[in-house]
Length: 124
Image (cartoon, rainbow, N blue to C red; front, side, top):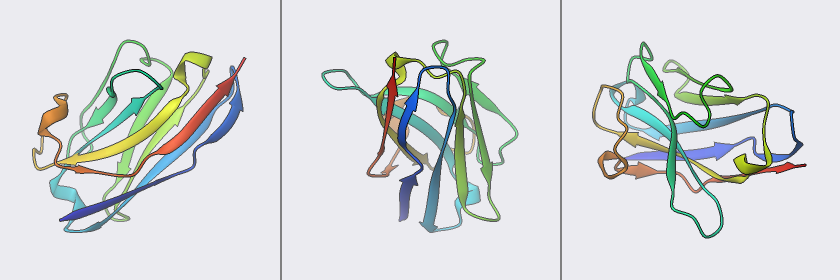
């Protein structure tokens, strides 16, 4: 089992930056690919970015490419999402999730473990 806890969400103005974190516990985290997802009210949960177990590869959805950066520190069992140039449409609850795949994983149903989420609100 892997337990995930997100933190760092909050309210930020459009154009601002925020870094959210995901702390893992339970099993060695270096064996899991990780993804950041988000869900806005009334919308489906969608992938934002994903990173391989080693951290050597990452993938981003087009709507955040060039603005968001996913990274991880396996020694600290942490994954981060640096969000720059935030837009009101980025407002959502952000979730981190872990998959037993080691490669970058972009399919939602391949993620077995989920955190409770952290709210990010971007004001215009």
